[in-house]
Amino acid sequence: MSEINVRLKHNFEDSDKLFRILFAAIKIGKPASKRKIADVADISSQLVDYHIDKLVDNGQLIKVDSMYTAQTIFSNKIIYKFLKDTVITQELIEKLVSGIDFSQATAQESQVLEEAILTLLRLFTIELKE
Image (cartoon, rainbow, N blue to C red):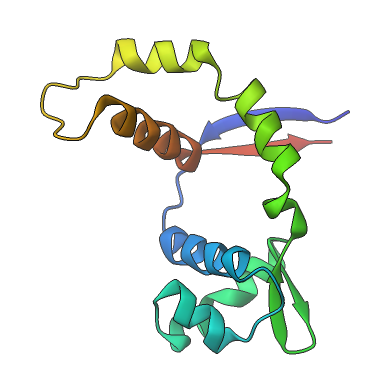
């Protein structure tokens, strides 16, 4: 079994665009053209054309002929249930509640917590050691 190191992600370049492209491909749910992905992601075709190979190279998208599709694991509800049961625990929620300053937030506490969890998930990365 591999050892896992968790660390703060330091490379934020292009990450938002890459996520939007990936999310669009997941939302489409079947192989789609770059143009269709760009339309769903609401970004230019040129940006999709520039970034999409990165998502194929890192294994998040699969190229099928001239179309692109997200890995099926990203739509697997069992994985999300596993994450909810093991990562997004009540203990994590309690730690967040005790560490967040809600005094300036205009959103409801639940929305602030949801955004905090999403931010934490996007800020960390893992490195598998062999």
